[in-house]
Amino acid sequence: MIPVKNKDEETIGWITRRLQATPKYLFSKGFAKSKCLFGINKVTNADTLYIVEGALDCMWLTQHGYASVAILGAIMSKKQIELLSTLNPNEIVLALDNDEAGRNGIKKATVDINNRFLISYLHIPKNYKDLQEIDNVNTLHKVMNRKVLL
Image (cartoon, rainbow, N blue to C red):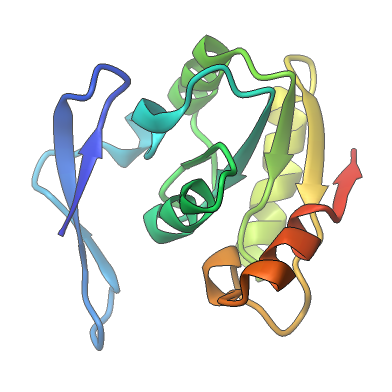
């Protein structure tokens, strides 16, 4: 179980990760994932902020020194965009999953936040579905340096 906290460190929900079940993730009753950014409580004065889909991707990046938040899905809500604005990053890097949903999420986010932030996206190599699958830290750092300005 993974706690979800708001910017003030208050627990607002829980995520359960199931190993061999569908869906893989369950959210606590009444938890509105579209109204939060997982990891927002760990971000302070981030010049560059990485946006990922999942909580585990966010934790993996944070563990290796990259400011990140997860939108807990592939599509960013209006409320999540408002929350991003409170963090005031100079650049947003979209690092959504390397699948059709992630690509569609990048396209939609680009339209939705284009006027608010400098936006880049990460080119995740084809052999990885998401950033958490990159278990070699040197490879992770190389991939993180492959951002493309939109």
